[in-house]
Image (cartoon, rainbow over all chains, first blue to last red; front, side, top):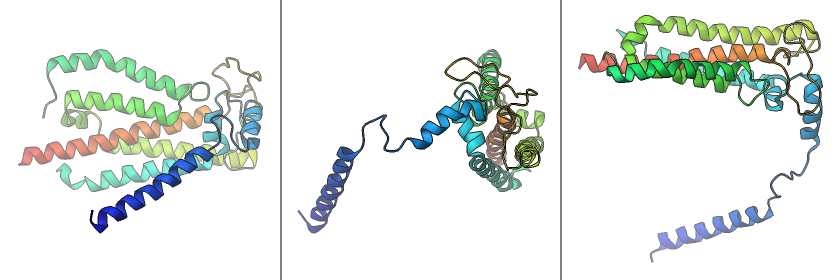
Length: 90
Length: 158
């Protein structure tokens, strides 16, 4: 084996060991470390926003500013594509 | 390019109402069931793209100008920001859900717990869903239509 293969095998084993240890250390599914914010949203979403869908209440109410950013990204994409292809129309 | 064969056009004509109704349902029930403006808008936009594929981009561009699509998209964005600023005006905070609990349009508060709620709930969230849905429908369809039209014109030239 030349030096490149040895270096590749070494790098791969180091990264693999890190990944395996992280996978072993991860907390079990459905048991997050801190649940304060989840519980607060789940208990208060119906009285505060009136929405039965907690995800939508987060997206459009608690984090509406984030959705505004997403809408801006879409707007920029459309503007860019329409501007890029305007010459090929003729 | 004048679209695909008569078989494809017929199947599209049969399938398109169901796709559009499903997408509009996902948008309108965004505050009750999984989905919302973005997802339902993507469904409706892919239905419109199916029309464009079946009938050809030149025909579609003649029916719906891309200028109108851009206008609809900007209208959706404007309604969204307007709703956010109405929250600032009526509820003292940007993006405030000022309609909830007012018993007017979409103002009812559902019973707590995991039960079925009626559609007249959630304050400004359904209105924002409609605005974002309009924006996503017009935006995605405009992107695909403009690109397909440009490619068709370029192939016709060569």
